Length: 447
Image (cartoon, rainbow, N blue to C red; front, side):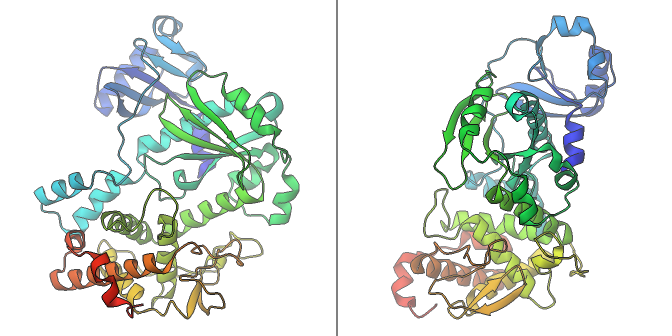
């Protein structure tokens, strides 16, 4: 998938203008304007300026007079009807900050559970424009960065932009990968950690300095910072042309884990897309109930929630997802056939109450989870919540969660379940009026 999208991005360019068109008129207008066939246009408004991403297989054949007449930024492959500021701020959806707007919109339209889910998926998952924008930028970044010292490398996306759970507002995680890894990475054929480790070359942190120097030659790339003392050294920067916040890392074992986890999560969404629906809905629930925050802390994070959902879907009877080991992605594993529960438009309506009940009734004090093997294991560590890291099985994904936050989380789940049971409408959980802090002392034995 990523290989084909990178290939398609080689045909993309951006055109910025005030005019707006429907898709058919857009193709005709730009084909006549440029003198070459243009197809599959997608558009997004940036500060009142329409930014079109267009496919042009014969980019070099664009009319010379058009290039001369328009404001053409060759480096970024951007045409414009006039000069526009590159200090843009794209008003994209993709986060849960405007909660009142969500509920006002849904109440006006009297959404059913399915309608509300479709609304959330359309509003908060990565759009066609958001996807193309990321690969368009990766193509331009590779042309800029992968020369001179990095000429033997290519850029590769990972994280929320490609794992099936990202939004238009997600940051773009990028890794520099040796070009000779193309057969493995582009065809998404897993390899052992030993093979991956042998191929790493930029082990010294001087690459941070060199990458920053190359990036700074492009005026549209701003706010470039080296973070060399992190567990995974990165270069952070901002693309003002695309309004993307980016983290650039270099290929090593730690980054390999991130890429592999992206592949795992994407594969799980293909087995049964209900996991993406549940995650989107329950992330909104956590945000509404102030159960999670943008900064790290002792609370359940979005990634922990996702892994809790994975464990639940592995443990229910019949299971919806297989053990991660059976995907054939992790080291020393083989793909094992798995028959999932048939996906239907109403499956999430059944599973979300089941998930709340799972949170309430499962003995988290005694048992933890191994998503790698798809099983429950008796715990031997004194931590509130234990989910084994499928790529480093000696680590607990949820080690930062503290008792008070976990008790609040489970109380909220209990109230959400009672609300859904009484009213039969999943949206009702967002209107649950309880003050958990006031009743927490009365429920010390709840966990």
